[in-house]
Length: 286
Length: 286
Image (cartoon, each protein chain N blue to C red):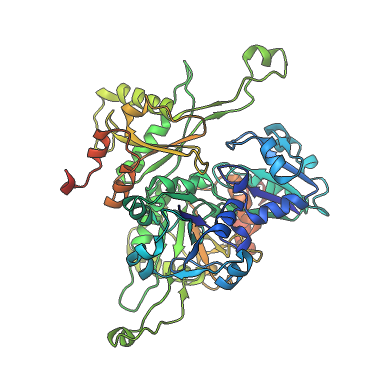
C-alpha cells in the first residue's frame, strides 16, 4: 500500500496514531520536503518515529515516482506531507500515478493551514477563495492576489493568504554553470506580505475606491507556527503589520471580510495595539 | 489548561499522538456530541483511550460551561470534537469563555471535512464559499444554498456542501409536554441532497438560465465516511446521485466549478457510470 500521510503543522507529535503505526511498519518512509516545513527538522521526526526518513525533493517526487513507489504493491511505503497530503499543496498526481501502476493507496488526513486557520477565530465557512502571496522581485510584482481579495471582500468573505516559500533556489550563476549549490530557504513573512499589500494600495490610490478596497488602517490577522507550542496570532492594521515581527516561519495571513460580533471578539484577543482593540470593540463597549 | 482537541474523521486512531497524551493525563474528558459523529461510538473511544468519556450535548456546552471548565485553571480538561475543534463547527465561544475566566487554553488541530474534502481530487484553493444543505420539510424548503453555489460557479469555483445533521430532535408533542424523549439522529444523505437540488433546478426551469445553473446532468461528487477504512467517493450526474446509495453517514457533497485536467482525471477514478467517465475524459481520449 502507498500511504500518503499528513503529519500536521506543529511538531513530531502532531501525526495521528494511525499514521504513526503505518510509519513504524513501513518498508520506507519519505518526507516531502519542498512545499512546507514543520517547526522541527527531519532528525526530530526520525528520533520520534524510530525510523530513517528519506527527504523527497521536487525532482524526486515529480520525476522518480517509480523509485518512490517501488515495492508498494506488496509492502507499505509511507509518504509524509506537512499538514494534509491533499491540503494547501495537492499530491493528487501521486495518487493518479499509483492507480496507473495498480498500486493501492490510502490517505491519512491531518490538519492543514486550510482548516487550522480557524484558530484566529474567523469562521471557516465565511472564507472565499484562498490566495497565494508571492515574493516580489524588482521586476516582477504581480497584484492578482489583491484583486481576488477584493472579490472576496465585496461578498463579505474572508481571505486566507498563503505566503510564498522558496526551497532549493539556485543563483543564476550556479544554474548556468550547472552547480548543484542551493540558496538557503526563504519564507515570506507576514510583515513582508503586508508591505506588498500596502504598496499595491498606494499604487492604486488614484483609482476609484470601493468599500472592499484595503487601506493602511484595514485590519488583518497574522498567524505563525500554527499548532506549535510557540504559535503566535496577531491582529493589526495593515500598516502596523508591516512592522510586526511574528518570529520564525511559517507565517500565513488573513484579510477579513464582514465580521460577526463573535468573530470580532476573537480577533480582539490577539490585538497588537489599542487602536485595533478599539476598532474591533462592539458598539456598546466604545 | 482547557484543551480543545480535534479527533479527526475516521475512527479512534485518528487522534494525534499529542492529543492522545493529553487525553490520557486529563482530569476529565468530554466529547462534543451534537454537531458531528465518528464512524465509531463513544465506547470505542473509551476503550482506545483507557478513559471515561463524558458526552457533552448542546445544552451542556452552551449553558454549563462553568461545569465543563471547572478546575481547568489548575488541571487539564479535554474537550474532544470530531474533525477540528474550529473546523466546520466553531467552538470559539468556549475559547472566549475560557479567556474570560482566566483559564489557559490550547487547541490541538486535526483534519476536518473542510480540508479532508481534498480526497476527491478537486483542489482546495479552487473552492469558494462552503454551504450547508438542510433537511427540507413540507413547508420549509429554503433555496439559498443553491444561489451560493451559483455565485461560486460563476467564478469557476467548487462548492463544498455540508449536509444537515439532526441530533436530539423532539416531536412537537414531546416538546409541548416537556418530555425529554428524543428522536433517533438523522443525517442528510448525498442522494437526498441531490434530490433537493434537482427540485430547485426544476422549479427554476422557467427562469433565464446561465452557464452556472445546474441541470440534471451536471457532475457532482459525494464523499462518505471520509478517513474511515470504508470511505467511499462517487462522481455522478445530479440525477444519478439522487438514486445512489453511499451507505452509512456522514456524507458530504461537492458541486464542481471549472475543472482543470488533473482534477477531471481524479474525479474519473470515482465515476459511477460510463457516461460520467466519458464526460470527464480529456479531448484526446474521446
